Image (cartoon, rainbow, N blue to C red; front, side, top):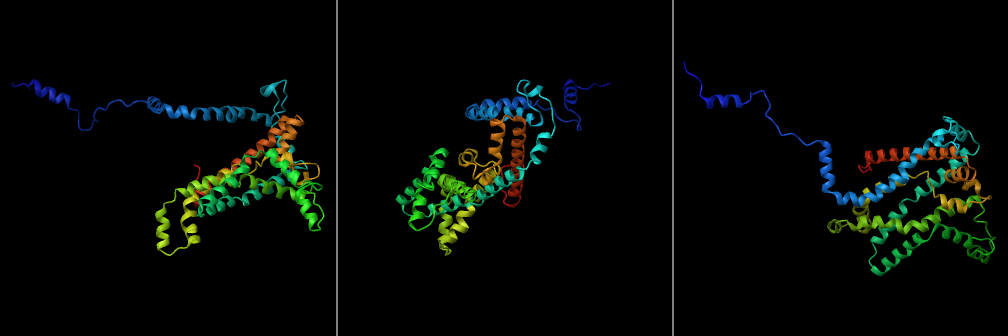
Length: 330
């Protein structure tokens, strides 16, 4: 009677069946892999830490207080101890006689500003075509400078230049036989003064990112277009504009994210009892109701309504941009 050899026995026991998977080394856990990536790139996380901490403290932690929009906030009881009122503050705002005026003024100012969105693009394309380096730098400096003027100074300049008695513009109107105009008191002039003074202040600064995008355009594309017989306008249309279009779309989406949030400080400084008909917007109403009148819950409800509209517009425009241009924030 023959017996199997020890080596054959070891070989037969060591080899797994054909349908049994081979043994694999244990994979590191997800937490361990994340820890390794953080340790490997700790310098980048350290660099981003101040911005993350800033947004955490000033943007996310205050979201706890949003609940006072649904409460009758009493300072002595605190946020947690104040009684719930549901949507009473929102119903009060939607049913108020000034709701439609506030909404109309805010939308008109926002749409007015969005219609002028292409101006920095046009200026950047024009500056990019200048051949004289001196004139180009001089123009850039001249258009950038107003950005560093504070909003208070800009409004003060408006009052000084447009004063009906001592203003420079009204003096010029008097020289041609026209009567002085109450620019800062006339409701019909408020929107034009607000928007165009903002354009003067921010136009040059807004062109920087477009000039940076134009600087990255491959010169060989222009050379090929010139060989094909394209003139300057055709090269701008078919080379420069498509090159900066992703940047344009991203900035357009970001602008829509603050569509309902017009410049609060500037509106507040320019508003008076005579032009309030067109100057009152949601942002200034929140300030007056919350901080001046002490109606914190009501002001929080109005501010939350404004923020929700901004979020809806941001998501909608982002989805449309991703669908039609393949460029979006997410």
